[in-house]
Amino acid sequence: MARRKIIAGNWKMNMTPSQAVELCNTLKDLVVTDEADVVYCVPAIDIIPVVEAVKGTNVEVGAENMYFEDKGAYTGEICASMLVDAGVKYVIIGHSERRDYFRECDCLLNKKVKKALEAGLTPILCCGESLEQREMGVTMDWIRLQIKSDLVGVTADQVKGMVIAYEPIWAIGTGKTATTQQAQEVCKGIRDCIAEIYDTDTAEAVRIQYGGSVNAGNAAELFAQPDIDGGLVGGASLKADFGKIVNYK
Ligand code: PGA
Image 1 (tube, rainbow, N blue to C red):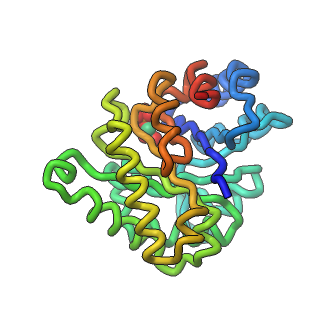
Image 2 (image 1 turned 120 degrees about the horizontal axis):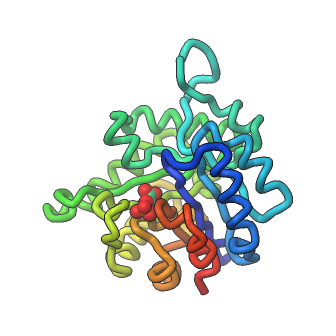
Image 3 (image 1 turned 90 degrees about the vertical axis):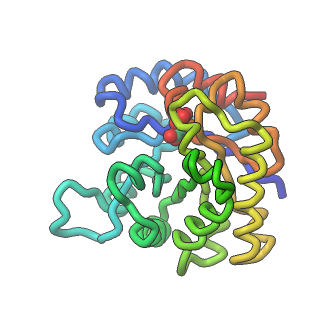
């Protein structure tokens, strides 16, 4: 069965609540499509107004992060049940900015993935290598380690419903996209890794996105690759261009 494409915006730390609603209104007619799932992953404070603003459209809302505990004394954190109650369907876990600036390790990310799944959220689990790692020739070893560690204790059925985003760190926000071949090669490598850990059915079902300087000009070629099931889009998700990315064909 063909995998349905999923194209998600990652707004990062952009858009005040009122700007967020304005952006939703600007994009509303531009992101209409029957062919892909469309998601806006937005800052926590924008979740409630954005859920309201996209009501009745084809857009679902995602969070950019969450904590793995159920509730309690974790000042500043947000738990899965809060996201679910607010109408969130997806959550980005392990973005390289969180791994790097906030020191999130695979052991923590594994707990977050399991909690998100348990709560009925779809994790968008991010992985990706640095430029140094690519130049040393250890890209796939590194990504396999991330995937394997982040999925400890996650069942095949759960993985089938998940999204994995391959984002080479050197391509994020730099305007330097991975070549179509590089992106396809790693996304296929991730699928092979899932087949090894689980089975081919699971590998065929899991959706794998490419992220890193995706724009209206390169989306069509990237998303046409056999193992690339859409994109996680940063900068270009904040502009009308996101409509062109969603309707890339
Ligand atoms: P970018 O960001 O599209 O601005 O490179 C992608 C991401 O970090 O998810």
